[in-house]
Image 1 (cartoon, rainbow, N blue to C red):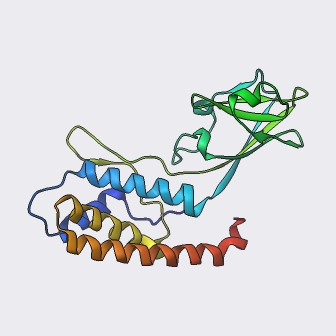
Image 2: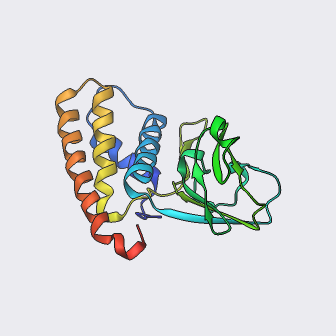
Length: 203
């Protein structure tokens, strides 16, 4: 996972000092925008994969919220799952109706995963797309959480997006449009950078 080394708190304070708006914007709004941006980038652009192995798993329901993850990772959602293996067999993603009929598949039940296999597997491997832990604010609207989880080379992606959102909520459409255009350019550059680096981290 990328880590800019810049805390979410410092980034938001920096943005608030730069954005010239009439009405104050709470930190909770900036945190919401930052969380949304990070989730979108990790789910749709970065797509960094990680694997969890479960040995001698009992039953056919895997409770995703109980899977072991690092402290800086967000809880795994079913939609984050890239693929699943039961021993050496790659399972097919399907729906509830088909999953009850056809073997060697997996499907969603609430936010958990149900697997249906021919034989009881000794090991289940789940490959999923990781996401950063959500930032929060406390009851005093103080930013809680860690760093902005982007490469430092592209920290301006977050800054441009938050500036655009701040101006948009204040109905300042011209600066909002300028910053969203800057964000879109940076995003395309980021996608190309990821493509160039893909062989180095297995994407």
